[in-house]
Image (tube, rainbow, N blue to C red; front, side):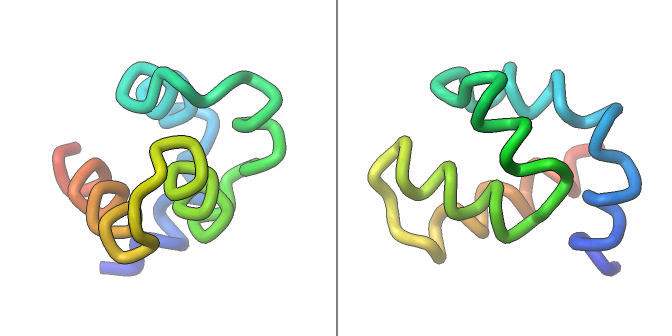
Length: 66
């Protein structure tokens, strides 16, 4: 499955759920992400001080929960 494409096409629907899961992300952060998978991974990595690999794994798991 192409998570990046799925993520971008469903960003408006996912945005609220992303904010619920990663509560430290602000609306401004989510505006910057704007449906870009790599941007979200980087933002989570920075805000939660985790490795990029861990952030990417969390986002992929989040997307497969649907």
